[in-house]
Length: 254
Image (cartoon, one colour):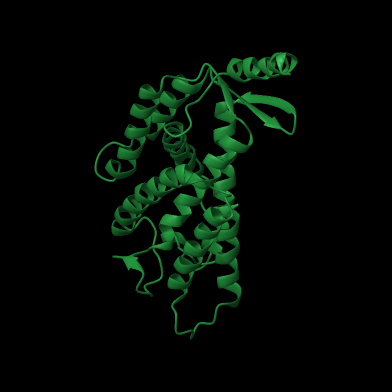
């Protein structure tokens, strides 16, 4: 919901925000993102516990933004005062939107897992992925090696999720790919709205390279690891045992 609201604000600012407004568009987007986040907490759509991991997404994302804009991977309009260097503060909220989506999905769909890998192993893989986002500008780009590591670590894991009263399942790698694909579509909308631009879009908008899909897939691993430290991944059997226990307890109640 947070991500959808932020994307809607970005589109609206592209279509209707006046060029000669006293408040720079980037500053408007930052203020709007803060308002949306406050409303999410006020209406209890997110909990304070979840807010902690969302803020961590914000910090992790902003740090990467500072580096990536400095090396010219992408760029923002040079306007506004709510910024750190060349990075407007609203950019961190785009990563926070991913965090918000992840924690809400985990809770609302009652996610359970078969053969979820040990969290310390997933943390090592996520750490290596994050380092590679920086280091590949100077040394060997290990993204394909990291992709192989992700497949090895998560390949046997199956995710169970609840829709109303029915449970469904899918390989967790498929869920990573689907979310990465959704983010890639959202990124196309964001660049069309000129919230930020890649070098090949400066002379005219064109679709974001499909190669970015791999980057977002790998970023999903970082996202999952961060959320897993707030909501520990549990096996499906834990839910089934709890569901089976409820009728028994009701029978002995006076």
